[in-house]
Amino acid sequence: MHLLILSSELEKEFLTIFGIPQSQKKKEHWSCLTDIAFAISAAIIHEASKATSDHIPTQVPVFVDVNSLPVEMQGKIRYCGGWALAKTRDNFRRYIKENLFSSKESLQGRVKECYVKKKAVDSLSSPSSSIHSSSAFPETLTITDRRQYSKGGLTHITDSAHKFFLALEEKRIQLMNSEQLKLCKSNLVSSAMNIAQADSRLLETWNGCLSVSCDEDTTQALTADLRKDIFDDVVERYFKMGAGQFLRDFRRDNQIQRTEAHRKRVAEKAKKDDAKKSKITIQEVKEDKSEGKVVTHKQLQALCTKHPKVFESRLYSKNELAPFFAAYGIIFRSSFMKARLNEILIAEIMKHDFIPNIPALG
Image (cartoon, rainbow, N blue to C red; front, side, top):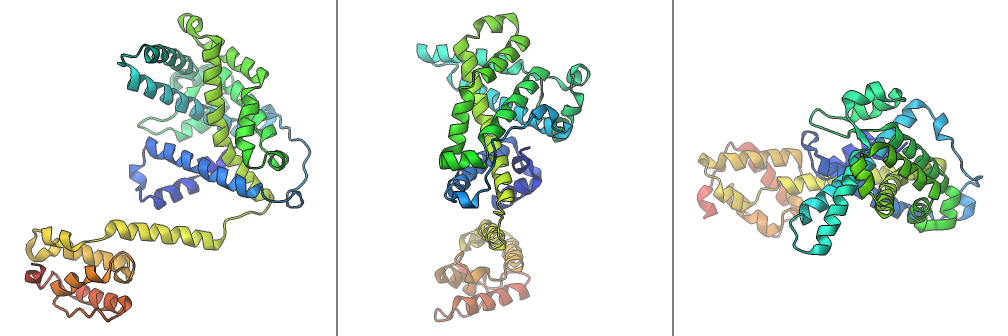
């Protein structure tokens, strides 16, 4: 379940494209990744929906008994449910923080409601120290344990919340499949969410979770409208994540795979972005206070080694190259092609231990 969103391959490509070192990834990056993944999912669904029914295998209505799924699959559903609750809670917390001291009475009322909703969502979490001894499904906890980091990660969810997400996943599978794609086309995700949010049995299961987990004060403050608000938000977040899994299944069933050309474009874009971040300007050379401008000289040598065609790319214009030629004491000929200028300049940079003609920089 949800292997696309959880896959290390997707995370690695995301970090590479945006130039984020593995050691510096943060919770904000994960949030951005899921937003991008959903946007891409929506675009792919739109394209996939253009296929005629001849290209999409005919299927009978999909039903999967989630309770009979392997333990690891149920653990992944539990993990994804914890993610949806965490995102919902963080959204409530952010709203409270931004509007806590507002003088508007309408906002003050919403802040109080948001606080109640946050407490309700908090009640569906359980400390790791106690959940392992109290859970009736301890084997489903391993996925969340595996994905927690020393500096904090997702907290475990209660057994009642786990049962709700099993029912929600069963509904998602019924609503996100090739037959539904033919009917709903590019509206597949929004249509599936609307149907799930209108499902009275799911809402009843959700209300049962809150009744079991909330304390007396929260239960009294939690109106039917507030319960429905939280339910709608959780369903939306879970279904957006589930859209990624559906697309993975669709590509597999219909042999829609990434081409080698696509992978090459991704790699080339990452390489261009890296070169752009590594660019050394003549202004940086002028501001270098080291003797012989040796610091920027070494940076230029590293740039030339990593990107042997850097000066013939769009990263540098011919006008930008002229001062570098002067700094290294070579004649600049504007009539030369950039490929020839690149060859001359790199050869000169690599043979020196410092920038030889500093006065030419002015």
